[in-house]
Image (cartoon, rainbow, N blue to C red; front, top):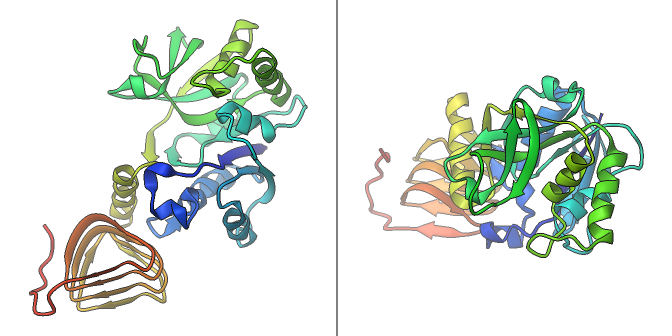
Length: 304
């Protein structure tokens, strides 16, 4: 089974951290976001993976050199023309299926059920604020219409970021139709618009409700995901060459060459080379080589 994962974006909502590190490589629960995604795909038998790269794409290539459970193809998206255009770069003109997974969320679902679907299937999840998402409208179990961030959504079933496409050729032709007719939403070729072209042509779309979406697209959600995953493991994720002295850590991800002294930390993600001394911090991303230091006489106390 082939997968396409778009990871070309700049990750502006995670700046300044993504100025130096591709957003899919930010650490969560001790691993880059993309590693969590790849592990779930390869565990389900997906080993042929195309990554759509752009911003800091060489970092993605370098990471993949050490990931041994899949074979990778890299396609550079030189123009940012939307998600539909990005995915199109990685499609083959064949009737073989493909699974498309976005690179900024860790999704929990029955992957085997998705990958053995008879029809094209979109992963969905109910959300309290559907205006922020692509939304599906159902008739029974079938998707009859898709909307990109509608003002008046017909349902609360958000398109979460995983799609099983029964034919790469049919999706490629739908995106080509958008490009040939200059059909854009918010000045971009949207994947949802390509899906609607396919639906209008009579192709069957099913929905599959996923169990959980662990978003990693903004600071608050990446920290929430870090907390959720480390809470399950019941441990911190500390790199072997990080130094921790006289400190109390709970649900923290500590990267290489980091140092923590006389501090209490809860749900903190430390990027490489950062240092924290004499501090009590919670729910914080500490940037590359950032140093946070307080009064050396401060009494260290655990954050509650």
